[in-house]
View (spheres, rainbow, N blue to C red):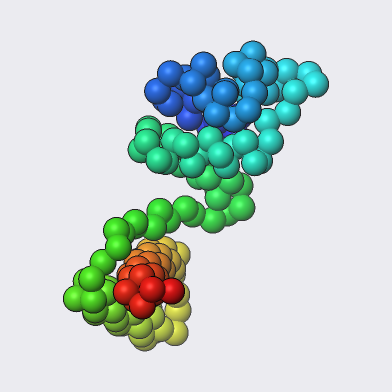
Length: 159
């Protein structure tokens, strides 16, 4: 799949399709369709692709991450969606610290296990990357909890 295929899938799966997406992107339906088909003189831009991806993600449509996945694959990377969290009280923030600590422990355990024989195989590297992705997701979740507590504290203090 290429970038235009990914964006076409996103538009197709968005409620109302191109007719609904085009005005939100500040263009006519005809222009959007020409850009997504790669018609001469029309170009689908990165900012529009990002905006469309955010629109799709907000509605949790199928293929919401298609564009980002194509970009990641082209860069020999993988996309790891991070969890979202509502504003949380202190006890939930503490829970994110504990969960993050557990995931870091799992990463260090995986690293020690992989280094035991002084060789890191392709499968060991893939497993390490997966565990590392979990750590990043937990760190992001923990930060969101701290940001929520920071905002709540400012609101209580009248800042």
